[in-house]
Length: 333
Length: 263
Image 1 (cartoon, helix red, strand yellow):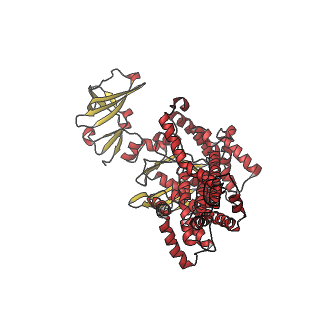
Image 2: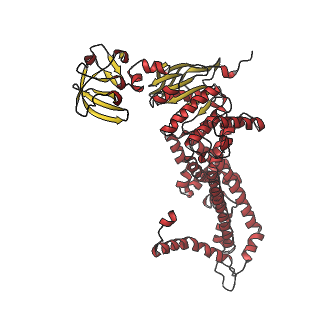
Image 3: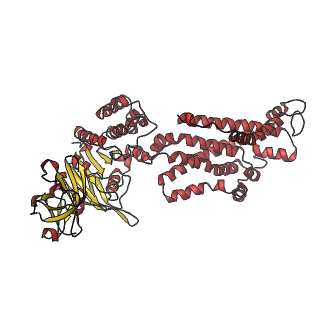
């Protein structure tokens, strides 16, 4: 049986990359499942882009291996890997029309004529730009350019698609729309996606699995719900938006207790924490508070206006409480 | 919109601008006039204009041979420094770091050093190679001194080009050569053409190196003009100068046109 090369899975095995004294990648290993949407999430400098660039072939690791099926591609030239990539800022060729941009990877593979024309038309159709083929990239909006970059990256049926913060240059509304479109595209083409972002909301809403990175390491790998509900450590919890970390003396138990602002609520007299409101932001359906405890700890909590009997104001003393099922214990870091 | 905001220049500004233009252009008009003289020595026409020195220029085997030699030398040296300068500029652009700036500065040395010093150095080294008084010698020297023009104009073009374009090309299946040919060069073509034009003009009217390295076998046009002035004040010189001016204007106009068409 002849194996379809697209069925080969990517496996990153213990790769390291050092720039001077900076360890950009520190023993990173990950097996990418076939057809999954994998997100590399982390702050800048966490190594997520270095990892993506190593997979793409633009960075050569100092040690470790990158395997595609049984083939070692650690040092294979980028053009030999057959991976599609959507770059930050799109990197569309300014001197070529949209149609020619999308045809470029086919031309490089010696595919011309009717077959190429058909593939280009299909790819442009898939991203909803069938009528823009004769335009130049500069004549398109940011969102449209992003779609051209996508069409160009999938038209040659790559083994997998690498996306380097593809939505970071777009405004919030367009970003939401394109997130939905990317998910649809992922289902439609059945390709493996490796997606780099620093936006936790984007990661949670799109991914099958998320690898959270910090200081060149993968600190947690798992499904979005697993990461959200059971962050492995304080860094992941903070990065996924947990606002409050309660110390031992407030909770009476060992280690830190992570509690989201949405899980910390006003309690009558019986609350376990007393604090003074220092700031409040009105957000329509809810008010987001910042309060200071006596020992100087800053806490965040949300109040839903729908079921609020009393709306505390600035400098008002409040008592706060939480339910054990909403709290995550961590060893003190 | 900007036209409505633009202020009418004052009489002082206008006069100053015209003064500068005259300052730049007047010597040229003198040369053109002298080339049309009817007298046997370098002078303005007295009785009437004459084309005799143009006739002399285009029938003299010496002058024609020098024009041809200068043309060959300028063409070949421009081709050499065009390729090397463009590749060097692209290399610096790809490295993009501090080292690239050092290399770029090194490329500009021929512009910063007095050409006399460069010529002297070249003479010493070329003498060792047996390149003095050869086409090879003067072509290589001109290719070196023409390099900064190419590096500067190509680097300027590259400054506006996203380095990710090359990565994108490679990712999409282009080899290094293909990405150079299909992506980078088409995007910097105006800069390359400007660089070639400047390098050509540089070689075409370069005298100092020609004085050192050229000789009986290789006698470039500027060298012949220099000898013409030193030995006998032959008005043919002015005719040559006029032809050179027109050629330069045509080249610059071509460069201007090609650049305008692209952008």
